[in-house]
Length: 341
Image (spheres, one colour):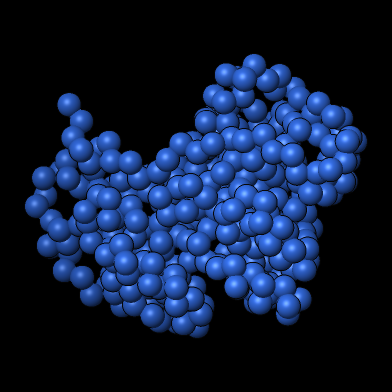
């Protein structure tokens, strides 16, 4: 019989809600997948929770007697997701954050029992310090180290793919014709969420039937740049308020998926995304950080979807928007961003 750990609820099934985002009478049908109700308030709970749970179970089943210690490098949603999962599984967690991490995110990570180390000018420096200095100094005879990459791990993608299982199940329960689903809209940072969506679509034999529209902001547009160059491109810097999309590169698998299944790329200016952050926050009563609002913006402006797909949408067509959630912003932060853009 499975023990408590094997069944620990590291992520939640989330609602898929039909929302009336556009006032245009010719607008398609929009469904929004609300990932902000995850334990860490973002989709990161799925993949990171799945990875940590899987590896913790493996260690405990091995009866090695070692202490389990989880290590993450992220001052944002990934680090918080790791800390929340570890709290639920009763294992130690250390998160290394760069000096750019916001004070309230550091507090949230600490509040669920994780140790926080502040090091590095940006994520990659924090990650390097974690791997070389922090994990490197552990006693491997006594400690089983579990390293958590924020987005580049197939086990993480597998966890994220569960949202597609839920979407498919809900649409079938509602007797929806899948031929009417014209696209799934998601935001892209390093590619973890996108890879999870593609993994799920492949599992349900839908990857070549339902196109994915990948949304970035100007200054975080590593996928768009890679598609244009037909090779992986690393940005010199991140210059956008959508810091949760702030990876200078996407994974190799992200580019491969995008090319194989002809995913569509959309890049938005910060001003549009910030305005949508405030608009959707007021609409939904969920604080909506810019990385999440990037996808939702297409619901308010479905002509962008039509341009990306190269076709006009009908009133009974369906677009699914992944509202990925996130905890990096307060309402005052959004107002301050708006005043600066």
